[in-house]
Structures are given as C-alpha cells and as structure tokens.
Image 1 (tube, rainbow, N blue to C red):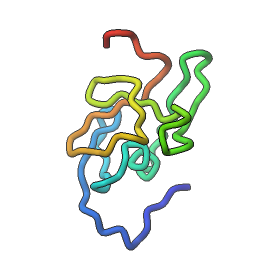
Image 2: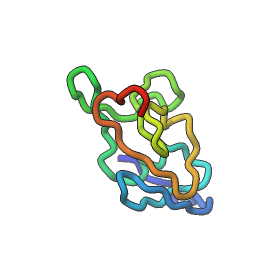
Image 3: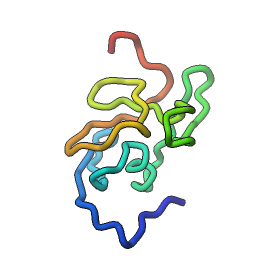
Image 4: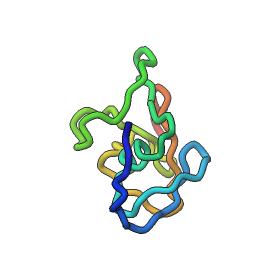
Amino acid sequence: MFKRSDQDQRPLVQIFVDGVAVAARQGDTVSAALLASGRDVRRSTAVNGTPRLPYCMMGVCFDCLVTIDGVGNRQGCLVPVAADMQIEIQKGKREIGK
C-alpha cells in the first residue's frame, strides 16, 4: 500500500524492527519507515488486542505506539529514525517501569 517515490535519494540508515534489520531513509519518522518497510507493523491495543496501524501521522491518535531503544509507549510518528535504532512493535500494554 505504501511505496517510496523513485525520486527519493536520501541516504539509507539501518534500523532494527523486532530484531530484523530494516532499511530506512534518513529523515523518516519511525512510523513512516515501518510503513514503507512492507512488514506487518500492527501493534495490538491493551484493552482487547485490536490491531492498529499508524493513522494520523502527526501525534494525535496514538495508534503508532512502539518501543524504541527499550522505552515503550513512544509515538513512532514523532520520532525520527537513527542508525541502529532498536524498535519493537508494541503488543498490548507496557509494564510501568520497563
């Protein structure tokens, strides 16, 4: 569904999604990189496990929550990718203090 423009010449950076190396473009947000990766990036909600995808891409809906470098409940649409960033697709709620 999401495809990068063939004109996009920004340098690539490597990030890791659930332990798998994924190429992202410098300047992408985490959510944009996840969507462009073609991987299944649906998180599940804490209440009933409903699958969610990044939706608004501007920090309003909270459907893009991921764990980044060990810190959970991060809004992926607001965080730019960085080389070697460790991202985990969030499943359910994050335990407090972890």
